[in-house]
Image (cartoon, rainbow, N blue to C red; front, side, top):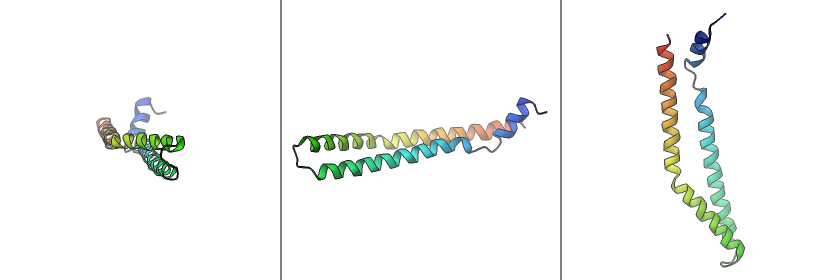
Length: 97
């Protein structure tokens, strides 16, 4: 029967699966952002300027574009989180030996 410490030691060593959800979430968010911008732009371009549909589509495109301005900061934060997570996994595995 393994103790909790031995079981944890085996599971942490080289376990990179903890970063997969962060990476998949980042990719999914990028896809949604790009599709939202493209679809909003196409909806806006099919309407006459000044109509309610044009104004709503334009507001959507402007909002998504404003969010896209912060995309680099979001990606940087996720990358830093992943690197820190990897460092914790690597060093916690080597310390428990």
